[in-house]
Every structure is written in C-alpha cells, then in structure tokens.
Image (cartoon, rainbow, N blue to C red; front, side, top):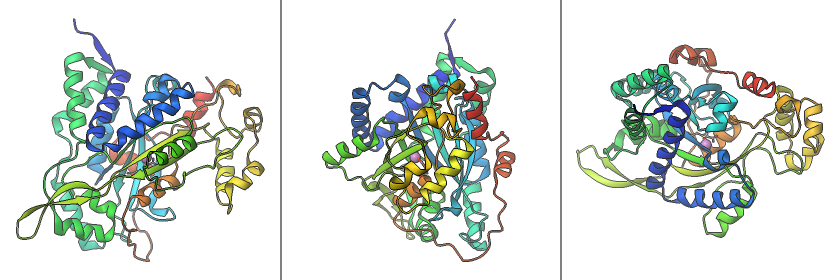
Length: 400
Ligand code: OOG
Ligand code: NI
C-alpha cells in the first residue's frame, strides 16, 4: 500500500515546487530567499516562518477564478477576504481574494497563501464597451487550466489527500500551469491593453497565466532591506504598511525590488516573431505581526492617514502586547498576550502600491460612475465557494 499524502503535505510540496520554478525564472528571488534565511536564522525563526511564502497570480474572468478556487481547494487553500483595488489611491482594474489555509493547525503545518486577482472587465471606467467585448472574447477563448487537472483537484479535495504517485503528478501539473510561457505575444494586442492598464496587458494580453511573485517572510524586514541594498540590489520602495515601532508589530510590512527585464517573444502584425523584453515581475519580502481586531484596524487606518504615521504611532497603539490585548485591539490565543495570532491576510493599500510600483504606467480610468457589480458575494457566487471573513477566522483562532 502506498502512503497517503495529506492535504497539508500537498500544500507544502506545491509551495516548494513553485519556489523552485520561480527561482529558475527569476534568479534574484534566490538571493532574496538567501538573505531572508540569513536574517531568520539569526533570529531563531520557526520552521513555519522559514518555509513561509505567499504567491500572487492574476486571472481574467470568473470561470478562470473558479478553476483556481477548485485547484487550490485540493491544497487546503480557501478564499479569504475580498479586496477591491479599483478604489485604491492608484486604482488597479482588478478585484481580488487570497487563498490560504484557514485552521490554526493547517496554518502551522504550512501557511502558503496566494493573492489572486481577477481583471474587472465590467468596469467601464477602464474598459469601453468595444474593448470589453474583445477582451472577454479573448479570455473566453483561452484555457489556463486543463479540465483534467481541475477534475483531479476536485477528487483530491473531496478525498482530503491522495496516494504518492498521483500527488506527484498532480503537483507537477499544477505548477506547470503557472510557468511562464514561451508562446509569442501578439504585440499589437498587448500594446493596446497596456495603454489601458499594464495589469490588463499582463492578464489578458497573453494566453497563459504565471506567478507574478513569490514572497518569503522575514522576521526583521528593516534589517533585510539594509542587507539587500548592501548587496547592490536596488529596493524600489520604502517599506509599505505600518511603520517600524517599539511596540508590538501589527499586520503586515512589505517591500520589494523590481525584477530585471525578462526576455519574451513577440509576434508583429506581419507575423514575424522577434525577441523583446517585459518588466512585469519582481521580488517581494514581508514581515508579519499580530492580527488586529476590527477596532484595531480602525485605529490603524486612522494612524496611517497621518502625515507621519511613525511619529504618531504611540498615540494610536500601546507599547506592549498586554495593553494591546487588554484594550481589545489585537488577537491573542486564549487572550494570552504572549500568544499573538499572526496576521495571515493582505492590506489593500499595500497591494495597490505593490501593483503600481511595478508598472510602467498608471491605469487610464475614465471619469464616470462605476456601474459594475463586483462584491464579495458576487465573487463567491461566481466561484461557487464560500469566501471567508478574516475576522471570523481570527476570532476562532483567538478562542482556541
Ligand atoms: C498582487 C499584489 C498584491 C501583496 O503582497 O499585497 C500582493 C499582484 O501584484 O498581482 O501580492
Ligand atoms: Ni505580494
């Protein structure tokens, strides 16, 4: 009898295999992982943190998102939260969710999560009717995931695991679906979309999807920032999210460097194929703090609206976990201040900033009302999966 591979093992192996793929595609990622590991070792990181990654992928329409939901369910990754990046400071024409494990035990085994965005083609501020029709037709015509892969994912999800041989085949096929394609890109089509939004071109300008980035977790992101810069790697952003503070680290801090141009093949109008380059992928790193309650989050948003959040931080947040727990601002297991519940999700402002910092141009949005119907319940209906409310998950983790 062959040993069964459980859901969490499938997830851990999937994350590791994607990491190998991405390292081969974006060599600087290996440097980032190396420097993160160096910092983590010095700070005695747990095994969970050392292997922890998040990925980001982008798809074109609800059918593709539904496939992603079915595929990730086999790895024990479920949709949590709804992020509307169209109303960010610098709007991006996508709506997103994050697929991740939801139970404390599963998170402890392997917390792999994937921020997944879907192009908002129904938003007329970005897509005029004619362009929308052509984009939707293009998307309807492509197939990101082999139906056999999705069928296998559904079987594995309902069996909560599978045998070794089929696990290996399944993981390899799943990883393959996110590899960068060598298929030539139709230059005129790509450029037309890029004019509306670089994200639209990245999503709907090609017939496949790919991992946009894979992000390691580091215990001291300020230290990592310094060490990467010392190695001559230009970190493009300041650190996004909450400022460094003396008290408990909250939510999520992220920074990134822009990847070099990557070679891609293009097909011109005359049918000629030529080599070109694209710069859409990058390296990102993050550190995670305690999850905030709804009240804590309101404070956070107020603090971040200050001109200098770092200088004002102490007026919004106490300096100790004890005070944080006592004032109900953050989640602690069993209310014990020595057991913070880690933040497992994303921040819309940082996400939009991350999208933006890696694009050559902002989206061109027409100045009109949004008549599209995107919402959490709309998305849940489209993908046929419940989308979890992050606060409910943190409440549950804290009550354990
Ligand atoms: C996703 C950007 C959001 C994060 O870490 O907030 C993200 C993307 O670029 O597709 O990954
Ligand atoms: Ni990211």
